[in-house]
Amino acid sequence: MAVRFLITLFLTLGCVLIQLQGISHAAIKSERLMPWSGDLDGMVERRVIRVLVPYSRTLYFLDGPEQRGIAYEMMRDFETELNRQLGNPHLRTVVAFIPTTRARLIPALEEGLGDVIAANLTVTDARSQRVAFTTPLGRDVRELLISHKNAAVPTDWDGLAGQTLMVHPDSSYFEHLLAVNRDLAARGKAVINITEAPGHFETEDILEMVNAGIVDYTIADTYLATLWKSVFEQIRVHPDLVLSQGNTIAFAVRKGSPALKDALDQFLVTRRTGSLQGNILINRYYRNSNFIKDATDEADRARFLGLVDLFRRYADEYDLDWRMLIAQGYQESRLDNTVVSPAGAIGIMQLLPSTAADMGVTDPTVLEDNVLAGIRYVRYLKDEFFNDPALDASQRLLFALAAYNAGPGRVRQLRQAALERGLDNNRWFDNVERLAAERIGRETVQYVANIYKYYVAYQIILEQILPLDSPN
View 1 (cartoon, one colour):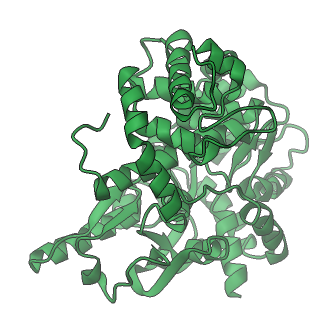
View 2 (tube, helix red, strand yellow):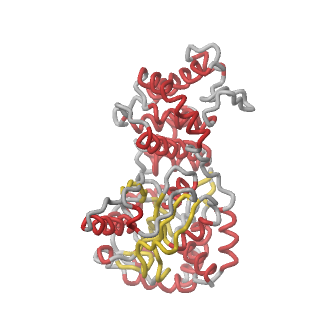
């Protein structure tokens, strides 16, 4: 029963579908962009229910033209059931998936930019004042401490005083940790150092970083901890260190949508069964994922420290963030200058000899020249293809990194396609990366995402052991 509950809960938490039969792309684009508030009858008339969900490589993602993910596959059945009840075999009402950062989930619902929030939202008093929650998908959910297996094991929350813990700032975990810190401070103890995860990170991303040894501690709901513990062998779940308990998890709709809430309630009750399908999906999406490697183990840390001065010198010369570039080097080669790819790419920065020559380097097997050529190439991509005043410096660098992997012409085409799709073509994460996933596949999306995670890892290393004068 416990396994069935966990599988069912995780599947139903991502109620999404974007199988838009019978509705033109232009129509869906306008539905996404135009604020609208109403109930189920209006949605049926419009033939679309817009579902706000955080973009997740396991719940919902695009892999080339294919839509994939646990939530996507589960919700094909939801669309069938909904239209069977409506008696609309031809003019179907569809559920359109709208990826939304966690910070924007409730505001977007309130602004009429979506109709349902399908995410692992914990029901809180503050949230209940703003939205109507559906029938619970999970009851008595506990928030547990998760650590790397080699991190110190605290006996209580006092034992985490002065330690660093990463969570998403828009999660209930963050709220509950602040309460713990208030208690610690009131008793004259050091508080827990709460590191805020980047906006596009999900709990699974932070757990992945804990598994890799990049982060020592985080918080996760019981069902997430149980599911990921079977995948991430380097994490330790602490069932006795409960941050919060007795929590309820549910979908949410606007308070003025009682008919939609009722339809969702009926569906969610029926979807508490089906563990066979759940097991198949869990195996498909959790046991075959390409997770980041440990960028902070001792050998990698030694290589990193040995290359800091080199990357910093050339990155400063070309006015680039050296930490992002050394993270790129780790993604390309694990900072190993002896690596040669089957395609002939050489060294830490994995450059073809022809590309290195274009950057003024004749022998990319030489460590210093390899790094110099790679940094020059990133600078070239940034200046020649993404010298757009609408792009801030950090976004220009992300687009240049994507171009390093996929080619600059293709990435510029993706920016234009994102604009036509109604997305922000000046932002990579959650926007242009979605077009990359659709038209290229997961490689470039994973490439940039991994670099960003390694970048976070190296920031943490620097805070711990390198008292550098300048962050650049």
